[in-house]
Length: 486
Image (cartoon, rainbow, N blue to C red; front, side, top):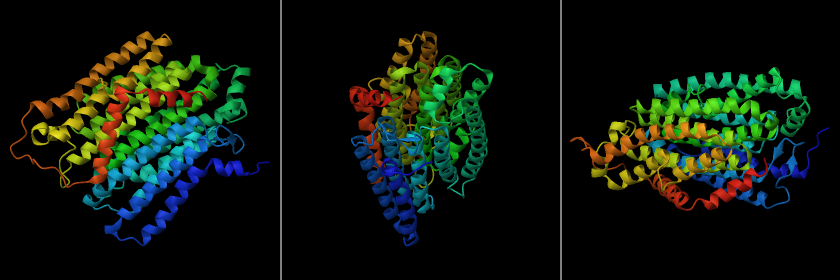
């Protein structure tokens, strides 16, 4: 019989802070005027910081690494590493959102509450040690994001993107549940440790178990927008409010990878020889399709959506490499991707003027002659996304390739390297427009009003991208320590 004890309560302290904080903010919002939503935004940031402090405290407490809730939940170093990525993404999203919501006339407190509820789901996904717990966390994250994608109700693109995301998301949830039911029927448990033990004692290569693993991977691949489960991403990324596009591309993707690494590197470890083929195929397909399709895009949000598909492929290579180094390379890649992608979307927001400009690639023509600083920071983020040294993006891909080569996947690494060359083309194309083309004669030479939150996000992102490119050791050490628990 399940009994709740004090360790169970303490282990979910960060999650409780975020969930209860969101409920409190929802009440505060009732008494806050539409022109004073900055208070709601500030309380949201304070809530996330409080959760971060609680997570930091837990990593040094006696609870660290102990399984709670009958083995379904773990507040360990692995979950802590990922939760800090989620916190960073949530704070950056909130800081980027305030001025944007006012300009779009959707400045509602529910927006920040939904961001926090999505964050709580991501946190559960990072700490879950049971397939059912991981499924609950996935739904806790997905449902608020469905609403956030369609938050701009007056925009048809937002409505279309949200509808596609909801329908395909429901389908992927059904596929995931089918896979979980098969695993339970074959292994007699949904606990990851129990599944691993059952697979060691039984025929891991049975057709039924391979089907179960395939269904589970398909469900999680939808969340990371891996090919061929990517069809929702371009429309959802383009239609969603730009800060939410950034939040989805970073936070939701990192949470999905948190689950993938838990499930496959821990629960299905005995089936590595079977599932590695599936992961390789999806990884290569994502890199090739995402990078080639991005070339044809004229909208920068759609281009970054296809770029995100390609980056999901690179991160999957770390799962292919397996082992501590492979998992550590994925964690480091996610940290790098968080900084450079949030920074790129922050520049897209900075370019937005009176509801026009910033989303079309042609809007960046001659930017270096009109605003040198904005062009410079965009150049840094694009260089990093392309994997050009001395940026963090180069180091992220470098460690993934090293993990691959040490496992003997030379051919896979070569294909990934060629795909990186294709990606460099469409990133450098924007740089060429900024620095080598003249701006249109009617172009606005002044930027939008000062936005301290947006400026803070860009400055922090630039520091991280350059800092991790020059000295990546600090984060790599943390990623290695986090990977040891798998």
